[in-house]
Structure formats: structure tokens, C-alpha cells
Picture 1 (cartoon, rainbow, N blue to C red):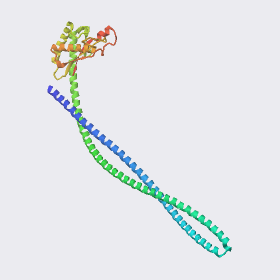
Picture 2 (spheres, one colour; picture 1 turned 90 degrees about the vertical axis):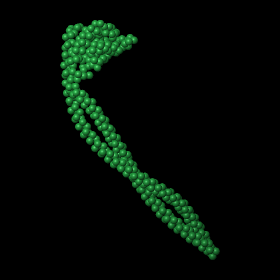
Picture 3 (cartoon, one colour; picture 1 turned 135 degrees about the vertical axis):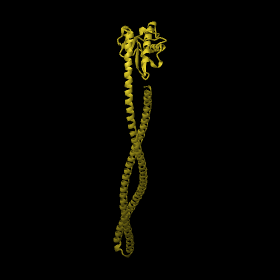
Picture 4 (spheres, rainbow, N blue to C red; picture 1 turned 30 degrees about the vertical axis):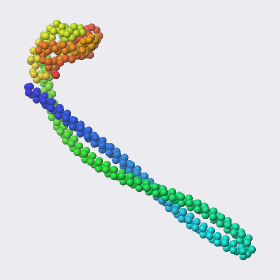
Length: 383
């Protein structure tokens, strides 16, 4: 029976650690998978942003191409207008030359005849007016030509700037395409790594499922064993309290409540003290003898412990030795524990705890309730 219990304990001690290690490995794999999913998400967002930027650049390039076409068309129209105006200017110059020749001819004719003098003067005046108009027209045409040449130069500069911007946009577009290609290669590599992680995760899940089945079987066996031990301990606990009832009889300050043996503090201690009195030592001696007898009959494979709980009433205490009811209740529980140790009970089967005034049996605030709440409880339980 002892060898089987020790083997069961070794199994219980080995498998939870193994399961914890596998759980840690699974959490690490899930963490890595989460990192890769996040990386893929952020890369997808970056690629989407690059695609949107590329589409905007393509749209801008289309707009620039259309604007360049319009500018070229306007430039051609201006060049046509300049050519036409140049022809008109040349015609005007030819007309001016003809008028000058006619003027010279009229001047020769003035010397030949007096009759034609007035007519010649009138013709000369008229010719001069025509020459003035022609000169004015020539000046206006010259100014218009200068203005058109300035506009043509500005349009040429704009066309040149547009061409440079278009070249730069093409360079940016090529760089963006190269970055997109690089990101696509990185995405493919990440997808391969993700596929390998998925395979590893599936293998780990399969192994974890098998181990969970083994742990579940071991847990069932352990629960069955523990249930048997609890039932056996319950049998000894029933025998323990039955013998206590026989030994103690109907003592008014010693009661058995459920699975606890309750001693009133007045039986064991003076007020505000944790030293066991003579009457309390007699009662504890009878109890220790009974416990020593029963402990010899409990099998060694049952991990039992006798827990001693100290409780006080609600009246506060503040002395140099006991600053509060916590210290007083703990000291009284330890005093009972040490007394039982001196009567032969093994130390590894004893435990002490102090609860102060925080677990009363009676919530009232009178002396009867205070007396009930000042107590020592002894409980036979499993470790």
C-alpha cells in the first residue's frame, strides 16, 4: 500500500510539470504565431498604402500628361498665330515699301507739273496718313509679337518643367514598384514560415491531446485513490469523535460541533493569557492520550493532520506581549500544539492557526456571545 502511494505521488509530481512545460511551449508557439499574424497584417496595411499611393501617382501622371497635351496644343496654336502675324507683318512691310516708292514717285512728279501739285500734296498727305497708320499697325504688331514671344517662352518653360516632373514621377513610380516587389517577396517568405508554424502547432496540438488523455486517466485514478483515502480518514474521524464523546461525556465547556472538537478558552487559559492552566492541562492530557492511541491505528499512507485553531471575542486587547487579538489567538493555538507535542503527538501531524475575532460563532454583543466565541477548535483533517 505504501509503495503504490509513493508511485502515485511520483506520477502526480512528474506529469503536472510535463503538462506545464508543454503548455509553456504551446503558449510560446501561439505568441510567435500572433507575432507573425500581426506582421502579416501590418505588411498588408503597408502594401495597401503603397498600392493606394501608386494609384494616386498614376492618376497624377495621367493628369500631368493631359495637362501637357493641352499645353502643347496651346503652344502649337500660339506658334501658328505667330507665323500668321509674321506673315501679316511682312505684308505690312512690303506695303510700307510700296508706299515709300510711291511717295518718291509723287515727289518727282511734283517738279513736272503744277496742276498736279495740290493733288500730289493731297496724295502725299493721304499717303503719309496711310504710312502713319501702317507704322502704328506695325508698332502694335511688334508689341503683340513681343508679348506672344514672352508667352511662348513661358509656355516652353512650363512644358520643360512638366517634362522634368513627369520624369521624376516615373522614377518614383519605378522605386515604388521595386519596393512592392521586395514586400511581395518578404510576404511570401512570411507565408512559408507561417505554414511551417501551423504544421508544428498541429503536431503540438496532437501531442497535447494525447498527453491530456493520459493526464485525465491519471487524474481519474488519483481521484479514485484520494476518494478512498478520504473515506478511510472519515471513518477514523468518526471513530475519533465517537471516542471523544465517550471520554468527555457531557462537559459543559467542551463540545463536539460537526467535525470539530471545541474547548472554551476559560477551561484552558486565564483572561488575556496564553498559558495553559492546571484544569486545562488535565483536559488536554486526556485528549492527548486519546489522540496518541488513535494516531497509532491510522495507517501510515493516510496523510492526516490535527489542526488547532485559536479564536477570541470582539473585545480588543493591547498589551506589550499581545498587541491585538491576532497575536493572542495564535499564541493560544501554539500553546495547545506544544502541549500535545510534549505528550507524544508527532510534530508533522500538528498545525496551529490564529483567527482573532473574525470568525465568531455568535454575532451578538453580550457576555454570553463573547464566552462562546473565546474557544480552541481541534479538527482532524487531511493535509
